[in-house]
Length: 504
Image 1 (cartoon, rainbow, N blue to C red):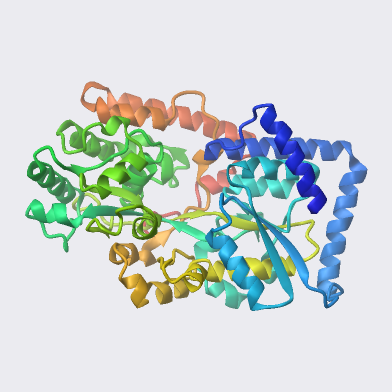
Image 2: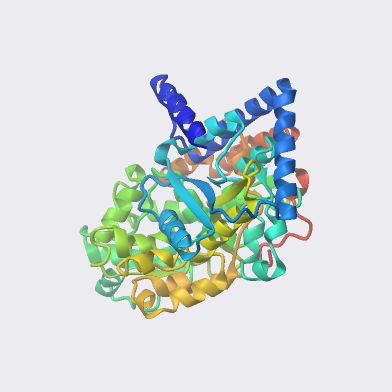
């Protein structure tokens, strides 16, 4: 692995000189990684001997592990590649604790930051990857499997271990009936609101509105009380993730669509079903309830204004509870809180939107897959508690897929003192993920919703919203047909039998 690392470093330097970009958008990264891996597969087909040698090596590794012949008594050395930019991150801290907890296995974590995708791509092209490597989307996993680089975890997933996790843990990175990674990060959306601004508007900060109509009225009251100094609602129209955080989340909670307007009951994209939610935010914009300049601000600017007491409420991810309490200057001073995202009056509340991120694969070339899984299991069980054990000031809520860990950590007096923990912990049993998110596999020939939705919010009253949404659906469904024909998506995953937004 040392020689591989040196070779990759040299290749990476050359790549940088040639001006290739290492840090791209999430979709671009996935496409780039997949393209590189397809290239790897093509090269492997041309060099049959090398490919056969790899297959023999993988078979020997599995036989060696199964027979227990690798028990030499020497400490097993594993290499773990992470996306983090700094060595002072939760994964490294947790692996350091794992190393100190026993004397059989030692894990070295190597962090590559913005260069991670490029480094991993080069490693894949060489046919060798570290014992443990971090991945993001399912498309990545499929590519690694097809290239013969990922090792399934099923033999280590005992019924006792699986019972500890939320069932969604074993669907995100499952392929062909086998599990290749388990996410260690959960993402879900909450409303972040300023308690002081609620009081200034004559509202009760202990009773956040449970309907969108009530939230609109509260935002209007805050804007009127602000008289130009602060506003009721913030929508960072410039950020592409805005629509997933705001419109998708409401649509999913309302049983209308899944992410990006995809309807799992029909197996097609139908953005028209999100129209009432778009109109809701368009009215906020038109009525001056949103912070001025919303059309040109991104999420970071909005967060800064929220902490500066300029915005009454906005939608953001659960990770910002830790961000505001521990990382962002002023977050521990501003009087803020969190609440559940409301739905329209009279709407039955469906399952909440759980997003799963950052899994860890075991390399098929690793000579110690069992030890690699042991390290991954330790990470999954301790990544939200190890940092606080190292530094008591790093108290943070647990966002794990292990319900018991979440309950224990989040019930501790230290975590209960954190701002926003009440809303963060509410209704978590209602969270559920989608096994397949089709939009991530598409190549569009036309405008994306990240282009269309801002226009509908800003110019909604002057546009034919129905026509624009129908056109958007056509663009995405055309790309969907292409993705299915190319084998990137399977029909059975697009319209799951018996699917229901309320029981999924």
